[in-house]
Amino acid sequence: MKKIEALIQKISGNDDIPLPRYMTNQAAGMDIFAAVIEEEIILPGQRKKIPTGIKIALPEGYEAQIRPRSGLAINQGITLLNSPGTIDADYRGEIALIVINLGEEPFIVKRGMRLAQMIIQKICRLDWVETAELTNTSRGSGGFGHT
Image (cartoon, rainbow, N blue to C red; front, side):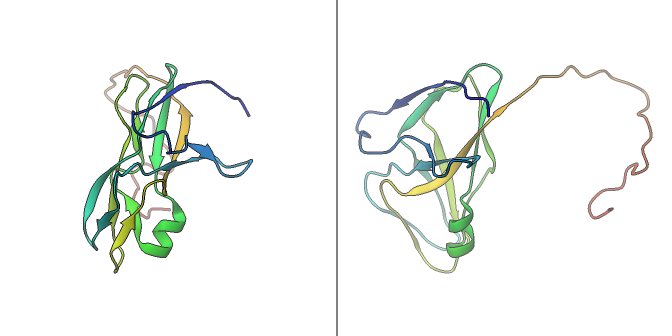
């Protein structure tokens, strides 16, 4: 696996919040942690913006994808809106999570709780070449359950 380096900054007052980290040797995503000042209660059907206490600077040509944690989704109905969220290489603000409670019980977000995961991906840019017609494939325009 290729390793790259990127800069990360803890926002003042968040020294106790762990840096994002891989929880197993072959994990694709790093868990990221809630940096709420006090416990936040998210009622069923409610969504809240939850701070992480970190800012990052990715190298050009990379993005960070922010995704839900499967255990929270299946066990409590907790997921993220705008998922996967994209952190661009030129963004320098705090990473925040849009957490929604699709479960049946209130959910309490505690400081330092593992709340999401971040995956780093290499990206490419393309230039569109406009054409009057596209090449044909066996699938054609079939979609939404076509296969």
